[in-house]
Length: 523
Ligand code: GDP
Image: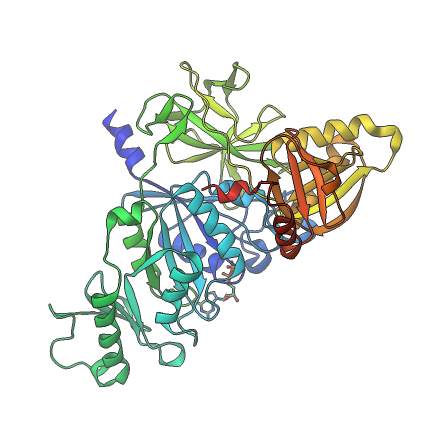
Protein backbone atom coordinates (compact mmCIF):
# COMPACT_ATOMS: atom_id res chain seq x y z
CA UNK A 1 0.00 0.00 0.00
CA UNK A 2 2.98 2.32 0.37
CA UNK A 3 2.83 2.62 -3.37
CA UNK A 4 -0.65 4.03 -2.99
CA UNK A 5 0.53 6.54 -0.39
CA UNK A 6 3.36 7.70 -2.66
CA UNK A 7 0.92 8.00 -5.53
CA UNK A 8 -1.43 10.21 -3.54
CA UNK A 9 1.39 12.34 -2.20
CA UNK A 10 2.64 12.99 -5.70
CA UNK A 11 -0.63 14.60 -6.79
CA UNK A 12 -0.92 18.37 -7.20
CA UNK A 13 -4.36 19.52 -8.27
CA UNK A 14 -4.97 23.16 -9.01
CA UNK A 15 -6.98 25.66 -10.99
CA UNK A 16 -5.77 28.80 -12.70
CA UNK A 17 -7.75 31.93 -11.97
CA UNK A 18 -7.45 35.15 -13.90
CA UNK A 19 -9.26 37.85 -15.77
CA UNK A 20 -9.63 37.21 -19.53
CA UNK A 21 -6.47 37.99 -21.51
CA UNK A 22 -4.12 37.94 -18.55
CA UNK A 23 -2.40 34.94 -20.13
CA UNK A 24 -3.96 31.89 -18.51
CA UNK A 25 -4.09 29.90 -21.74
CA UNK A 26 -0.54 30.79 -22.62
CA UNK A 27 0.71 29.85 -19.17
CA UNK A 28 -1.24 26.58 -19.25
CA UNK A 29 0.26 25.68 -22.61
CA UNK A 30 3.76 26.38 -21.33
CA UNK A 31 3.17 24.30 -18.21
CA UNK A 32 1.92 21.45 -20.37
CA UNK A 33 4.96 21.87 -22.55
CA UNK A 34 7.30 21.45 -19.57
CA UNK A 35 5.26 18.47 -18.50
CA UNK A 36 5.84 16.87 -21.88
CA UNK A 37 2.02 16.81 -21.86
CA UNK A 38 -0.64 15.94 -22.30
CA UNK A 39 -3.90 14.65 -21.26
CA UNK A 40 -6.42 17.29 -21.87
CA UNK A 41 -10.16 17.37 -21.75
CA UNK A 42 -11.19 18.97 -24.95
CA UNK A 43 -9.33 22.11 -25.52
CA UNK A 44 -6.89 24.40 -23.92
CA UNK A 45 -8.78 26.91 -25.97
CA UNK A 46 -9.57 25.95 -29.51
CA UNK A 47 -10.63 29.45 -30.37
CA UNK A 48 -7.17 30.85 -30.44
CA UNK A 49 -4.77 28.05 -31.15
CA UNK A 50 -7.01 25.74 -33.13
CA UNK A 51 -4.60 23.03 -32.18
CA UNK A 52 -6.67 21.26 -29.61
CA UNK A 53 -10.03 21.90 -31.17
CA UNK A 54 -12.34 18.94 -30.93
CA UNK A 55 -15.06 18.07 -33.32
CA UNK A 56 -17.60 16.44 -31.08
CA UNK A 57 -18.21 19.14 -28.56
CA UNK A 58 -21.67 20.21 -27.81
CA UNK A 59 -23.39 22.07 -30.59
CA UNK A 60 -23.55 25.39 -28.86
CA UNK A 61 -19.89 25.13 -28.24
CA UNK A 62 -19.20 24.60 -31.89
CA UNK A 63 -21.34 27.52 -32.89
CA UNK A 64 -19.49 29.82 -30.62
CA UNK A 65 -16.12 28.21 -30.95
CA UNK A 66 -15.55 28.09 -27.25
CA UNK A 67 -15.10 25.51 -24.61
CA UNK A 68 -18.31 25.56 -22.60
CA UNK A 69 -17.11 24.04 -19.42
CA UNK A 70 -13.91 23.55 -17.57
CA UNK A 71 -11.56 20.89 -18.74
CA UNK A 72 -9.02 18.75 -16.98
CA UNK A 73 -5.39 18.44 -17.99
CA UNK A 74 -2.80 16.14 -16.54
CA UNK A 75 0.95 15.87 -16.79
CA UNK A 76 3.93 14.47 -14.93
CA UNK A 77 6.84 16.60 -13.82
CA UNK A 78 9.74 15.74 -11.55
CA UNK A 79 7.94 12.91 -9.83
CA UNK A 80 4.71 14.85 -9.44
CA UNK A 81 1.46 14.19 -11.22
CA UNK A 82 -0.14 17.53 -11.90
CA UNK A 83 -3.86 17.98 -12.56
CA UNK A 84 -4.85 21.37 -13.92
CA UNK A 85 -8.53 22.14 -13.83
CA UNK A 86 -9.43 24.83 -16.28
CA UNK A 87 -11.67 27.59 -15.02
CA UNK A 88 -13.05 29.33 -18.08
CA UNK A 89 -13.25 33.08 -18.30
CA UNK A 90 -14.80 35.30 -20.96
CA UNK A 91 -18.43 34.77 -21.82
CA UNK A 92 -18.18 31.15 -20.77
CA UNK A 93 -17.79 32.11 -17.16
CA UNK A 94 -20.44 30.28 -15.14
CA UNK A 95 -21.15 28.60 -11.84
CA UNK A 96 -19.10 25.70 -13.15
CA UNK A 97 -16.10 27.95 -12.98
CA UNK A 98 -16.73 28.55 -9.30
CA UNK A 99 -17.53 24.91 -8.59
CA UNK A 100 -14.34 23.74 -10.19
CA UNK A 101 -12.53 25.61 -7.45
CA UNK A 102 -14.16 23.31 -4.89
CA UNK A 103 -12.24 20.41 -6.43
CA UNK A 104 -8.72 21.85 -6.28
CA UNK A 105 -6.13 21.95 -3.51
CA UNK A 106 -4.57 25.21 -4.60
CA UNK A 107 -4.92 27.96 -7.18
CA UNK A 108 -2.59 29.85 -9.45
CA UNK A 109 -3.62 33.45 -9.98
CA UNK A 110 -2.37 35.04 -13.20
CA UNK A 111 -2.18 38.82 -13.31
CA UNK A 112 -1.39 41.02 -16.28
CA UNK A 113 1.38 43.34 -15.10
CA UNK A 114 -0.05 46.14 -17.22
CA UNK A 115 -3.55 45.88 -15.80
CA UNK A 116 -3.12 44.75 -12.22
CA UNK A 117 -6.04 43.16 -10.40
CA UNK A 118 -9.14 42.99 -12.61
CA UNK A 119 -12.78 42.26 -11.76
CA UNK A 120 -12.94 38.57 -12.64
CA UNK A 121 -9.77 37.91 -10.68
CA UNK A 122 -11.46 39.41 -7.64
CA UNK A 123 -14.53 37.18 -8.00
CA UNK A 124 -12.53 34.00 -8.40
CA UNK A 125 -10.15 34.99 -5.67
CA UNK A 126 -13.10 35.33 -3.29
CA UNK A 127 -14.17 31.78 -3.99
CA UNK A 128 -10.65 30.54 -3.24
CA UNK A 129 -10.65 32.57 -0.08
CA UNK A 130 -13.95 31.06 0.95
CA UNK A 131 -12.29 27.68 0.83
CA UNK A 132 -9.04 28.82 2.40
CA UNK A 133 -6.95 27.35 -0.36
CA UNK A 134 -3.37 28.42 -1.02
CA UNK A 135 -2.95 30.90 -3.84
CA UNK A 136 0.20 31.28 -5.92
CA UNK A 137 0.51 34.44 -7.98
CA UNK A 138 2.13 34.72 -11.39
CA UNK A 139 2.51 38.29 -12.62
CA UNK A 140 2.69 38.01 -16.37
CA UNK A 141 3.83 39.98 -19.43
CA UNK A 142 7.02 41.46 -18.01
CA UNK A 143 8.29 41.66 -21.59
CA UNK A 144 5.95 44.63 -21.85
CA UNK A 145 5.93 47.83 -19.91
CA UNK A 146 3.46 47.53 -17.07
CA UNK A 147 2.80 48.85 -13.61
CA UNK A 148 5.68 49.18 -11.18
CA UNK A 149 6.27 45.94 -9.26
CA UNK A 150 5.83 47.63 -5.89
CA UNK A 151 2.52 49.00 -7.04
CA UNK A 152 1.38 45.53 -8.10
CA UNK A 153 2.29 44.05 -4.74
CA UNK A 154 0.43 46.86 -3.00
CA UNK A 155 -2.63 46.11 -5.15
CA UNK A 156 -2.62 42.48 -4.09
CA UNK A 157 -2.67 43.55 -0.50
CA UNK A 158 -5.10 46.43 -0.86
CA UNK A 159 -7.58 45.11 -3.41
CA UNK A 160 -7.57 41.44 -2.48
CA UNK A 161 -6.51 41.74 1.13
CA UNK A 162 -3.91 39.00 0.86
CA UNK A 163 -0.34 39.50 1.96
CA UNK A 164 2.30 38.87 -0.66
CA UNK A 165 5.78 37.45 -0.61
CA UNK A 166 7.68 38.15 -3.85
CA UNK A 167 9.75 35.04 -4.58
CA UNK A 168 11.53 36.98 -7.29
CA UNK A 169 11.67 40.53 -8.54
CA UNK A 170 11.83 41.84 -12.09
CA UNK A 171 14.90 43.65 -13.34
CA UNK A 172 13.33 46.23 -15.62
CA UNK A 173 10.43 45.52 -17.94
CA UNK A 174 9.40 45.85 -21.57
CA UNK A 175 12.34 46.44 -23.89
CA UNK A 176 14.55 46.85 -20.86
CA UNK A 177 13.56 43.61 -19.22
CA UNK A 178 16.77 41.91 -18.14
CA UNK A 179 15.37 39.08 -16.08
CA UNK A 180 14.40 38.30 -12.51
CA UNK A 181 16.24 38.62 -9.29
CA UNK A 182 15.36 35.36 -7.57
CA UNK A 183 15.14 35.83 -3.82
CA UNK A 184 14.23 32.26 -3.21
CA UNK A 185 17.07 30.60 -5.15
CA UNK A 186 19.47 33.50 -4.58
CA UNK A 187 20.29 33.90 -8.25
CA UNK A 188 19.51 36.06 -11.22
CA UNK A 189 17.68 34.47 -14.12
CA UNK A 190 18.40 36.39 -17.31
CA UNK A 191 15.83 37.06 -19.97
CA UNK A 192 16.61 35.85 -23.49
CA UNK A 193 19.69 33.92 -22.45
CA UNK A 194 19.80 30.26 -23.36
CA UNK A 195 19.39 27.37 -20.99
CA UNK A 196 21.73 27.07 -18.02
CA UNK A 197 23.74 30.15 -18.95
CA UNK A 198 20.79 32.19 -17.92
CA UNK A 199 21.46 31.79 -14.20
CA UNK A 200 23.91 34.01 -12.34
CA UNK A 201 24.50 32.85 -8.76
CA UNK A 202 24.51 35.49 -6.03
CA UNK A 203 26.71 35.70 -2.98
CA UNK A 204 25.61 35.77 0.67
CA UNK A 205 24.81 39.44 0.42
CA UNK A 206 22.58 38.77 -2.54
CA UNK A 207 24.95 40.40 -5.02
CA UNK A 208 26.91 39.28 -8.03
CA UNK A 209 30.53 38.47 -7.23
CA UNK A 210 33.09 39.88 -9.63
CA UNK A 211 32.35 41.44 -12.98
CA UNK A 212 29.23 40.98 -14.97
CA UNK A 213 27.80 43.19 -17.71
CA UNK A 214 24.46 43.29 -15.92
CA UNK A 215 26.14 45.23 -13.11
CA UNK A 216 26.65 48.13 -15.50
CA UNK A 217 22.93 48.68 -15.73
CA UNK A 218 21.30 51.12 -13.37
CA UNK A 219 18.44 48.62 -13.20
CA UNK A 220 20.68 46.28 -11.25
CA UNK A 221 21.26 48.90 -8.54
CA UNK A 222 17.60 49.72 -8.46
CA UNK A 223 16.68 46.08 -7.96
CA UNK A 224 19.18 45.69 -5.14
CA UNK A 225 17.55 48.65 -3.44
CA UNK A 226 14.07 47.33 -3.93
CA UNK A 227 15.01 43.88 -2.73
CA UNK A 228 16.55 45.40 0.36
CA UNK A 229 13.31 47.23 0.97
CA UNK A 230 11.41 43.95 0.63
CA UNK A 231 13.80 42.22 3.01
CA UNK A 232 13.44 44.92 5.59
CA UNK A 233 9.86 46.07 5.31
CA UNK A 234 8.15 43.24 3.43
CA UNK A 235 6.36 40.16 4.70
CA UNK A 236 8.31 37.21 5.94
CA UNK A 237 8.27 33.98 4.03
CA UNK A 238 6.08 31.46 5.81
CA UNK A 239 5.25 28.03 4.54
CA UNK A 240 2.40 27.77 7.05
CA UNK A 241 0.81 31.00 5.95
CA UNK A 242 1.04 29.98 2.32
CA UNK A 243 -0.71 26.72 3.23
CA UNK A 244 -3.55 28.52 5.01
CA UNK A 245 -3.99 30.92 2.12
CA UNK A 246 -3.14 34.13 3.96
CA UNK A 247 0.17 34.73 2.20
CA UNK A 248 0.65 34.41 -1.54
CA UNK A 249 4.07 33.75 -3.05
CA UNK A 250 4.50 36.00 -6.07
CA UNK A 251 6.44 35.15 -9.21
CA UNK A 252 7.18 37.50 -12.10
CA UNK A 253 7.58 36.28 -15.65
CA UNK A 254 6.45 36.26 -19.22
CA UNK A 255 4.41 33.27 -20.29
CA UNK A 256 4.54 34.16 -23.96
CA UNK A 257 8.33 34.06 -24.06
CA UNK A 258 8.37 31.08 -21.67
CA UNK A 259 10.35 33.13 -19.20
CA UNK A 260 10.08 32.38 -15.50
CA UNK A 261 7.59 29.59 -16.13
CA UNK A 262 9.83 26.68 -15.29
CA UNK A 263 11.14 28.38 -12.17
CA UNK A 264 7.56 29.05 -11.20
CA UNK A 265 6.51 25.44 -11.81
CA UNK A 266 9.38 23.97 -9.84
CA UNK A 267 8.89 26.26 -6.87
CA UNK A 268 5.15 25.89 -7.00
CA UNK A 269 5.44 22.11 -6.82
CA UNK A 270 7.60 22.44 -3.71
CA UNK A 271 5.01 24.40 -1.80
CA UNK A 272 1.69 23.43 -3.32
CA UNK A 273 -0.32 21.14 -1.08
CA UNK A 274 -0.82 17.46 -1.79
CA UNK A 275 -4.44 16.26 -1.78
CA UNK A 276 -6.15 17.62 1.29
CA UNK A 277 -8.72 16.03 3.61
CA UNK A 278 -12.30 16.89 2.81
CA UNK A 279 -15.14 17.39 5.24
CA UNK A 280 -18.13 15.07 5.33
CA UNK A 281 -20.94 14.08 7.69
CA UNK A 282 -18.41 11.67 9.22
CA UNK A 283 -15.80 14.37 9.81
CA UNK A 284 -12.72 14.95 7.68
CA UNK A 285 -11.82 12.14 5.31
CA UNK A 286 -8.12 11.49 4.89
CA UNK A 287 -7.01 11.19 1.25
CA UNK A 288 -4.85 8.28 2.34
CA UNK A 289 -7.89 6.28 3.46
CA UNK A 290 -8.17 3.14 1.41
CA UNK A 291 -11.89 3.40 0.88
CA UNK A 292 -12.64 5.03 -2.45
CA UNK A 293 -14.70 8.21 -2.11
CA UNK A 294 -15.31 11.18 -4.35
CA UNK A 295 -17.80 13.90 -5.18
CA UNK A 296 -19.34 15.25 -8.35
CA UNK A 297 -18.36 18.88 -8.88
CA UNK A 298 -19.55 19.34 -12.40
CA UNK A 299 -21.85 17.76 -14.94
CA UNK A 300 -21.23 18.42 -18.58
CA UNK A 301 -24.08 17.70 -20.91
CA UNK A 302 -24.05 16.42 -24.45
CA UNK A 303 -20.35 16.22 -24.94
CA UNK A 304 -21.14 13.87 -27.72
CA UNK A 305 -24.37 14.90 -29.44
CA UNK A 306 -24.63 11.52 -31.14
CA UNK A 307 -25.11 9.84 -27.80
CA UNK A 308 -26.71 12.63 -25.84
CA UNK A 309 -24.66 11.58 -22.91
CA UNK A 310 -23.44 13.56 -20.00
CA UNK A 311 -20.22 13.38 -18.11
CA UNK A 312 -20.11 13.74 -14.36
CA UNK A 313 -16.72 14.99 -13.19
CA UNK A 314 -15.65 13.44 -9.93
CA UNK A 315 -12.84 14.56 -7.70
CA UNK A 316 -11.35 11.51 -6.03
CA UNK A 317 -11.01 12.36 -2.32
CA UNK A 318 -9.72 9.10 -0.90
CA UNK A 319 -8.73 5.62 -1.99
CA UNK A 320 -8.20 4.33 -5.44
CA UNK A 321 -10.60 4.24 -8.33
CA UNK A 322 -10.41 1.19 -10.53
CA UNK A 323 -12.39 0.67 -13.65
CA UNK A 324 -15.26 -1.72 -13.23
CA UNK A 325 -15.46 -1.21 -9.49
CA UNK A 326 -18.75 -1.13 -7.64
CA UNK A 327 -19.68 2.09 -5.95
CA UNK A 328 -22.64 3.38 -4.01
CA UNK A 329 -24.26 6.70 -4.74
CA UNK A 330 -24.65 8.02 -1.18
CA UNK A 331 -27.77 10.10 -1.89
CA UNK A 332 -29.84 7.12 -3.04
CA UNK A 333 -27.92 4.18 -1.61
CA UNK A 334 -27.97 2.68 -5.08
CA UNK A 335 -25.09 0.46 -6.13
CA UNK A 336 -23.50 0.88 -9.57
CA UNK A 337 -20.66 -0.57 -11.53
CA UNK A 338 -18.31 2.07 -12.88
CA UNK A 339 -17.23 0.50 -16.11
CA UNK A 340 -17.49 3.55 -18.27
CA UNK A 341 -15.09 6.00 -16.88
CA UNK A 342 -13.21 8.38 -18.98
CA UNK A 343 -10.32 10.68 -18.97
CA UNK A 344 -9.20 12.70 -21.90
CA UNK A 345 -6.46 13.00 -24.40
CA UNK A 346 -5.99 16.05 -26.52
CA UNK A 347 -7.74 14.52 -29.50
CA UNK A 348 -9.74 11.63 -28.19
CA UNK A 349 -11.12 10.47 -24.92
CA UNK A 350 -9.05 7.94 -23.14
CA UNK A 351 -10.40 5.43 -20.74
CA UNK A 352 -8.93 5.71 -17.32
CA UNK A 353 -8.28 2.52 -15.42
CA UNK A 354 -6.95 3.86 -12.18
CA UNK A 355 -7.03 7.12 -10.31
CA UNK A 356 -6.19 8.09 -6.73
CA UNK A 357 -7.02 10.93 -4.36
CA UNK A 358 -6.46 14.25 -6.08
CA UNK A 359 -7.27 12.95 -9.56
CA UNK A 360 -10.36 13.79 -11.56
CA UNK A 361 -12.38 11.19 -13.40
CA UNK A 362 -15.26 11.62 -15.79
CA UNK A 363 -18.17 9.20 -15.50
CA UNK A 364 -20.73 8.61 -18.19
CA UNK A 365 -24.01 9.74 -16.82
CA UNK A 366 -27.51 9.10 -17.99
CA UNK A 367 -29.14 11.34 -15.41
CA UNK A 368 -28.00 9.49 -12.30
CA UNK A 369 -25.79 12.14 -10.77
CA UNK A 370 -26.41 15.55 -9.29
CA UNK A 371 -23.93 18.26 -8.50
CA UNK A 372 -22.43 17.65 -5.09
CA UNK A 373 -23.20 13.90 -5.03
CA UNK A 374 -20.86 11.65 -3.09
CA UNK A 375 -19.89 8.21 -4.37
CA UNK A 376 -18.22 5.63 -2.16
CA UNK A 377 -16.63 2.28 -2.89
CA UNK A 378 -18.63 0.32 -0.32
CA UNK A 379 -19.55 0.95 3.27
CA UNK A 380 -19.51 3.06 5.37
CA UNK A 381 -21.57 5.47 3.35
CA UNK A 382 -20.52 9.06 3.79
CA UNK A 383 -21.79 12.34 2.39
CA UNK A 384 -19.38 15.11 1.59
CA UNK A 385 -20.54 18.59 2.58
CA UNK A 386 -22.82 20.17 0.00
CA UNK A 387 -21.15 22.50 -2.45
CA UNK A 388 -21.47 26.16 -1.50
CA UNK A 389 -24.17 28.22 -3.07
CA UNK A 390 -22.84 30.94 -5.30
CA UNK A 391 -24.54 34.26 -5.54
CA UNK A 392 -25.98 34.75 -9.02
CA UNK A 393 -25.64 38.12 -10.69
CA UNK A 394 -27.71 37.84 -13.86
CA UNK A 395 -31.43 37.15 -14.03
CA UNK A 396 -33.96 36.11 -16.61
CA UNK A 397 -37.72 35.71 -16.40
CA UNK A 398 -38.64 32.49 -18.14
CA UNK A 399 -41.78 30.68 -19.29
CA UNK A 400 -42.81 27.93 -21.66
CA UNK A 401 -43.48 29.18 -25.17
CA UNK A 402 -46.26 26.69 -25.58
CA UNK A 403 -48.66 26.82 -22.65
CA UNK A 404 -49.78 23.29 -23.47
CA UNK A 405 -46.32 22.01 -22.66
CA UNK A 406 -46.12 23.01 -19.00
CA UNK A 407 -45.23 19.50 -17.93
CA UNK A 408 -42.02 19.28 -19.94
CA UNK A 409 -41.16 22.82 -18.92
CA UNK A 410 -41.43 22.05 -15.21
CA UNK A 411 -39.68 18.74 -15.49
CA UNK A 412 -36.79 20.28 -17.39
CA UNK A 413 -36.41 23.28 -15.17
CA UNK A 414 -36.48 21.20 -11.99
CA UNK A 415 -33.93 18.79 -13.33
CA UNK A 416 -31.58 21.53 -14.45
CA UNK A 417 -31.91 23.32 -11.14
CA UNK A 418 -31.10 20.12 -9.26
CA UNK A 419 -28.11 19.59 -11.46
CA UNK A 420 -26.89 23.05 -10.56
CA UNK A 421 -27.07 24.37 -14.12
CA UNK A 422 -29.01 27.44 -12.98
CA UNK A 423 -30.66 28.82 -9.84
CA UNK A 424 -34.40 29.18 -9.59
CA UNK A 425 -36.60 31.80 -7.94
CA UNK A 426 -40.34 32.40 -7.99
CA UNK A 427 -42.31 35.59 -7.68
CA UNK A 428 -45.53 35.64 -5.70
CA UNK A 429 -47.39 35.28 -8.97
CA UNK A 430 -45.56 31.99 -9.54
CA UNK A 431 -43.44 33.46 -12.29
CA UNK A 432 -40.11 31.76 -12.75
CA UNK A 433 -36.91 33.74 -12.56
CA UNK A 434 -33.61 32.03 -13.12
CA UNK A 435 -30.27 33.32 -11.94
CA UNK A 436 -26.74 32.66 -13.11
CA UNK A 437 -23.25 34.00 -12.61
CA UNK A 438 -22.50 34.03 -16.35
CA UNK A 439 -24.55 34.67 -19.48
CA UNK A 440 -23.58 31.34 -20.99
CA UNK A 441 -25.57 29.47 -18.36
CA UNK A 442 -28.76 30.91 -19.88
CA UNK A 443 -27.78 29.80 -23.35
CA UNK A 444 -26.98 26.32 -22.14
CA UNK A 445 -30.28 26.31 -20.26
CA UNK A 446 -32.27 27.30 -23.34
CA UNK A 447 -30.46 24.78 -25.48
CA UNK A 448 -30.92 21.92 -23.06
CA UNK A 449 -34.59 22.71 -22.39
CA UNK A 450 -35.24 22.43 -26.09
CA UNK A 451 -33.04 19.44 -26.83
CA UNK A 452 -33.47 17.33 -23.75
CA UNK A 453 -36.96 18.25 -22.58
CA UNK A 454 -38.55 19.34 -25.82
CA UNK A 455 -39.51 22.64 -24.26
CA UNK A 456 -39.10 25.93 -26.06
CA UNK A 457 -38.73 28.75 -23.60
CA UNK A 458 -39.29 32.49 -23.70
CA UNK A 459 -36.68 34.40 -21.81
CA UNK A 460 -36.95 38.01 -20.75
CA UNK A 461 -33.64 39.38 -19.57
CA UNK A 462 -33.78 41.33 -16.35
CA UNK A 463 -30.09 42.19 -16.42
CA UNK A 464 -27.82 42.16 -13.45
CA UNK A 465 -29.17 42.38 -9.95
CA UNK A 466 -27.74 42.31 -6.50
CA UNK A 467 -29.24 39.40 -4.66
CA UNK A 468 -29.59 39.23 -0.89
CA UNK A 469 -31.27 36.63 1.24
CA UNK A 470 -33.51 37.67 4.15
CA UNK A 471 -32.83 36.27 7.59
CA UNK A 472 -35.84 34.57 9.18
CA UNK A 473 -39.04 33.47 7.47
CA UNK A 474 -41.15 36.61 7.51
CA UNK A 475 -41.00 39.64 5.33
CA UNK A 476 -43.49 42.37 4.53
CA UNK A 477 -44.75 41.80 1.00
CA UNK A 478 -45.17 45.51 0.49
CA UNK A 479 -41.42 45.79 0.29
CA UNK A 480 -41.65 44.20 -3.14
CA UNK A 481 -40.98 47.01 -5.62
CA UNK A 482 -39.49 47.42 -9.07
CA UNK A 483 -36.12 48.20 -7.58
CA UNK A 484 -36.24 45.58 -4.86
CA UNK A 485 -38.03 42.52 -6.21
CA UNK A 486 -39.10 40.07 -3.56
CA UNK A 487 -38.90 36.43 -4.65
CA UNK A 488 -38.49 33.00 -3.07
CA UNK A 489 -35.65 30.61 -3.75
CA UNK A 490 -36.26 26.91 -4.28
CA UNK A 491 -36.09 26.26 -0.55
CA UNK A 492 -38.81 28.87 -0.04
CA UNK A 493 -36.47 31.40 1.48
CA UNK A 494 -37.17 35.09 0.91
CA UNK A 495 -34.78 36.83 -1.41
CA UNK A 496 -34.54 40.40 -2.68
CA UNK A 497 -33.25 41.21 -6.14
CA UNK A 498 -31.98 44.79 -6.01
CA UNK A 499 -31.64 46.84 -9.12
CA UNK A 500 -28.18 48.07 -8.16
CA UNK A 501 -25.89 48.91 -5.29
CA UNK A 502 -27.68 52.15 -4.68
CA UNK A 503 -31.07 50.40 -4.34
CA UNK A 504 -29.54 47.95 -1.88
CA UNK A 505 -28.08 50.70 0.31
CA UNK A 506 -31.24 52.75 0.16
CA UNK A 507 -33.24 49.72 1.26
CA UNK A 508 -30.89 48.97 4.11
CA UNK A 509 -31.16 52.56 5.34
CA UNK A 510 -34.93 52.51 5.14
CA UNK A 511 -35.45 49.06 6.61
CA UNK A 512 -32.71 48.34 9.10
CA UNK A 513 -34.97 45.74 10.73
CA UNK A 514 -34.84 43.53 7.62
CA UNK A 515 -31.61 41.58 7.96
CA UNK A 516 -30.05 40.76 4.62
CA UNK A 517 -27.18 38.45 3.86
CA UNK A 518 -25.09 37.17 0.98
CA UNK A 519 -24.08 33.50 1.31
CA UNK A 520 -20.74 34.25 -0.31
CA UNK A 521 -19.86 36.74 2.40
CA UNK A 522 -20.11 34.18 5.14
CA UNK A 523 -16.62 32.92 4.68
P1 GDP B 1 -6.33 34.19 -21.30
O1 GDP B 1 -7.52 34.87 -21.85
O2 GDP B 1 -6.04 34.59 -19.89
O3 GDP B 1 -6.32 32.72 -21.49
O4 GDP B 1 -5.09 34.83 -22.10
P2 GDP B 1 -4.21 34.27 -23.29
O5 GDP B 1 -3.21 33.28 -22.80
O6 GDP B 1 -5.09 33.84 -24.40
O7 GDP B 1 -3.41 35.59 -23.64
C1 GDP B 1 -4.04 36.78 -24.04
C2 GDP B 1 -3.14 37.57 -24.95
O8 GDP B 1 -1.99 37.98 -24.23
C3 GDP B 1 -2.63 36.76 -26.14
O9 GDP B 1 -2.55 37.60 -27.24
C4 GDP B 1 -1.26 36.31 -25.69
O10 GDP B 1 -0.39 36.08 -26.76
C5 GDP B 1 -0.81 37.50 -24.86
N1 GDP B 1 0.16 37.12 -23.83
C6 GDP B 1 0.10 36.09 -22.96
N2 GDP B 1 1.20 36.05 -22.18
C7 GDP B 1 1.97 37.11 -22.58
C8 GDP B 1 3.25 37.60 -22.17
O11 GDP B 1 3.91 37.07 -21.30
N3 GDP B 1 3.69 38.71 -22.82
C9 GDP B 1 2.99 39.33 -23.81
N4 GDP B 1 3.53 40.39 -24.39
N5 GDP B 1 1.81 38.88 -24.24
C10 GDP B 1 1.30 37.78 -23.62
